[in-house]
Length: 302
Image (cartoon, rainbow, N blue to C red; front, side):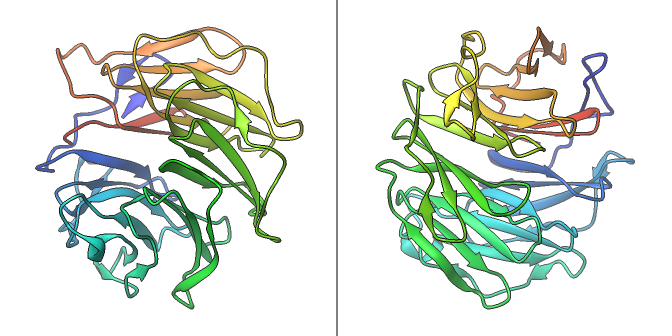
């Protein structure tokens, strides 16, 4: 974790995973951090004590994405892998307190599930997959209620609900972002074009009027959903791929995680602050999230 005011780490690094850490998220209660890994586990970490909280949640397949429900009661995970076959390509719900699965595997994707995100009311989960489709799941009925949405022509790497839950945004290796209306299951307007390579991460601003995206073309771009156009020019070209973007709760800052082990806190209108732990070489940053004035990052190993 980092204090974004003075660009310094908070406490010590969390360590325990035996393989790549693919996803890191804050609990909505701000007392825990959850991390998902290719080692097939989800680990929970006490943010006050800087130590693991309880035993890991153990799955059967590599995990690519995890998300807390708004009430922090559940975690959703997306899994799959090249060598696991179609059996591992599903969304799973976990009970945080009971430390066990809370649903049957939610199956439908034919390739690994790269992204999961809860709706604001906690009743649905949106997922994106290497099969180039998006699905929305009803967690009570344990089935797909919207989709598959099939307009993307490349892997769907990241998905997110809007703050009011009426829209979702997706980004893909087809170099486009797409905005969807959850109520009528249709794409809103034309695809958002501007990135010149694979797009890795997308996020809604807290007010729901802007979208941030980052990708392999080493740029971070801001989009106005009212017009479907970029806001000004892309943030300056960096020297490495942008693996993750996240807005601060106030909407004034974007945390950007890079393959070259750096994190940049970008003011939506202003200069960059770079976070560097000063501890020598670290693996690439694969995920980032901002909560209040802290930034949590996921590296290849936690």
